Each structure stands twice: as C-alpha cells, then as structure tokens.
Length: 342
Ligand code: GLY
Image 1 (spheres, rainbow, N blue to C red):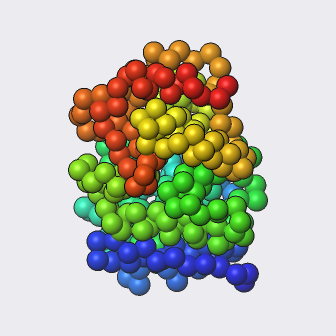
Image 2 (tube, helix red, strand yellow; image 1 turned 90 degrees about the vertical axis):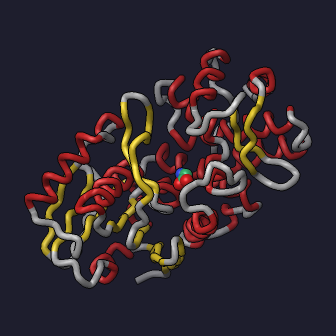
C-alpha cells in the first residue's frame, strides 16, 4: 500500500483517527468497533468507491440533491436500521460527500440515541471539512442544516483513489475550503503533496474543533472561524440558484471578507491584495459574479446567522488573526460589495 497519513482528532476526551491515502478504504474493517456484527452502509448511486466492512452489511442509498437532505431521509434510514436490527454494538458507515456524511451522521446520532458512525469521504470537500468535526444535520424549509447534532465519528477514511474521478468543479469546492485554511494559519497548502496536504487540512480543522467542539457563540476565535468567507458565500449560493457551488462561493466570500475588514481598518491594502492572490493561486475565481442585486445579497447575509445581534455578523481577518465580528453596519457591507473585483 502506498504512503498514508493518520491524523488523530481529539475532542471531548476521546480521539478518533482520520486515515488519508490511496487504497486506505481497505482498512475499514479494522477501524470498526470490535463489537460490530452488522453495518449499515449509507451511500448514493454513482459514488465511485465500494466498501467491504468484513461483517454482515446492508447498503442503503439516499437521493441526490438538497431536497433529500431531510428528516424524511433520516426516517427512511432509521426504518432500514430497524429492519436490519442494527444495535448500539454495530455501526453506520457513510460513503460519500458532505451530504451523505451529514445525513448518515445525524441518523446515527439519533438511532437508539447514538450508534457509532464511520465516514468514508469521497470528495475533497468531505475530506478536508464535512467529514471532520462531528457536525451532522438536515435542512428544513426554513433553512439549511437547522436540525442536527454534534456526533463525532468513530473514524474517518479519506481514500485518495476517490478523487481520480471527481469532477473538476467538485475539486474546486475543496480548494475553496483549503484557501480558507491558508488564511487561518498562513500555511501554503499548495506546497505540500497529497496526502500531506489533506492531512494538514484535517489537522487544522481538528485543532479548531478540539478547542471549541460546540461552536460556543460567545467564543469569537472558536469554531466559528471555520465560517471565514461563508457569510457572503451562503448568500451567493442562494442568489445564484447554486450556479456557484459552495467552495467557489467561499472563494469569493474570502475576497469579500477582506474588503469588509479593510473598510473597518482591520487590515491594510496589501493584505486585501494577498486574499485575491491566494484565492487565485488555489485555482479559484475572486470576482463577484455579474448581475447580482446588492440589496438581495445584504438581505441574505443579514439572515445568515444563528445568533441574534444588531447589524451583520462576519468572520474577519484583523491584527489578532481571524475572529467573529458582530454589529457590522449595512453601509460597510455595501461599500465592500462595491469594492469587489469584477
Ligand atoms: N464546516 C464548519 C464546521 O465544521 O464547523
């Protein structure tokens, strides 16, 4: 087997391994809890990775598309867990991108009040972000990811073979989150080879999650910093009807956050220019897509928060690094939009 990297994520007094490398999916059986006699494999049609847990297993497919990231899908999964008599000694294995690991992780967190889940991430975004850190959940009509749980996985497998067939656009999505990690740490991830690059992203996220697993809303430098670039990104995803995929939108959001920080005199123009340069070096577009109404973007950004504060809340760079900044005025947000590269 070729070279692999294992990162231990320590959170809430326990550790789990994230194994990164080519062919590492073969290790799935050895990573299951020793008590597991049955495994529910949750995946989607077309996922280019098959798994062999080495014990009795049932494969359950969920649909493609945000509409399947729902409580109805969780109910369907739990019905299947009941049919196969999945117990708390057993395990759920989620094989797919962020949607699969979010939904399967939430079903696992609820079934019998919590059964172990192992994530086999098959997208770059899943490997560097979604599968790590224990956030699980589904959407409601009222918004994305509104129902969920913190449920840390038992282990995570990032098999780089899955990336060989990943569409270019999906790769870019992962690169958007990588550019975010670049700003959080100053690490040039592009200078590293795979799998070290993915291992380093996992370590960066693991360190943030270890310090603030549940995203304490009073902790300005806690887990919320992982949302750097995400306030405008979420608005762009909605305003473009998902023409801009998540990581592509995060890239634009990072460039925008730099302009908000500049308008608040938290960073200088050289640091703003560095944001544009870094985002482009990760193969991403920095420009704001044409034809979007600033009023709509401001309205969407004002809605994008789980804590009620006056003004808009952003995660911004500054003299002490990246942190949450509440109470940003609409006029600053508007001026920063006007200053975006086109
Ligand atoms: N994706 C952000 C987080 O896991 O907190």
